[in-house]
Image (cartoon, rainbow, N blue to C red; front, side, top):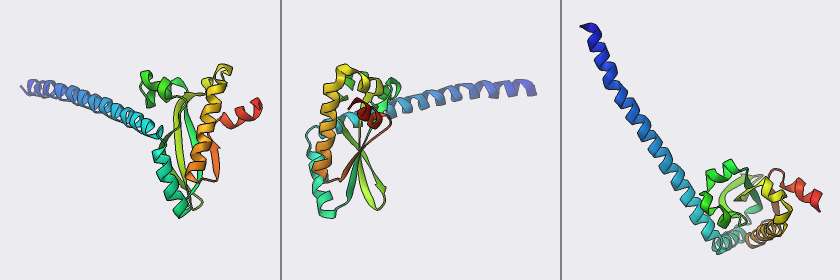
Length: 162
């Protein structure tokens, strides 16, 4: 008798664990979609230059922004993680505001794009890379930041390619 009571308890617990996993998976999918939608909306807003102009007004009044830092997805896995595959082409060569950092008493602006290192290094994308760098330089000027910093292999690649 004792054994059958234990088996009944185990059988009742199994559906609860399964439904917990389903709820967790659903929450994860919702979180991923909310993150992607937020990045997409922020990216579209950044194309108007309004966010950067507002940051420039604030930065020039307070002298707070020391640098603009650009990071990128690096590879396809991370590019898919941050944006919908169907939106990558639209977002790829446009830097989007994704955050701020504080270093040495100054604030910095973080911009990003879902472009990969392979796409940076592809000679067919040289024009797009130059457009991206021009946009980043414009962000630096508009916000009043003193320097533009680039992540990972991009600075070395630009030095080598001239």
